[in-house]
View 1 (cartoon, rainbow, N blue to C red):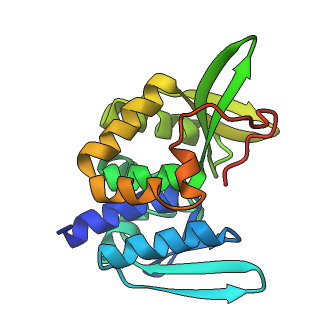
View 2 (view 1 turned 180 degrees about the vertical axis):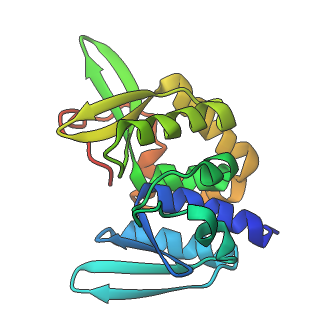
Length: 210
């Protein structure tokens, strides 16, 4: 059983990846039905309140936080300019389930062949434009989870790059700490592509999170 506090700490990962916050709710917009379906399953499994609606081809998932104080108080979700940012409060508390949500929401795995060698890495797209915010997330991954990454700036977007060693370290963390979530993800259409380290042909020139 996950405590209410830990559920909110997990939502930090969803918020910091592709979520927005509004008066007690973390909101996710996506056209990816498989991603939204998996999130809905996971939220139901850990007994979090949410609702889902459709606007055209866009899914809107609204997740109710357990306690507003984890987001509302002392600029924990939005800064003094009412802008999304990675607050120290969130970065010090995000748990492994939050890391999992962060990765599946904004990460894309690449397994590519170059000069007869196969390279494996992931790119995690970030919704922050300031490098100082990106560096905070990079340092959080290393300090809290022991995962090293490299910052990449491509087409005016920031990404964190994880090599094969760091990916395996992260996947092992998922397998050890949240096995039921990790196993379900590997069995779910399209979500499983984020964990498949087998060689397959992809286009490395267009790194965009699915």
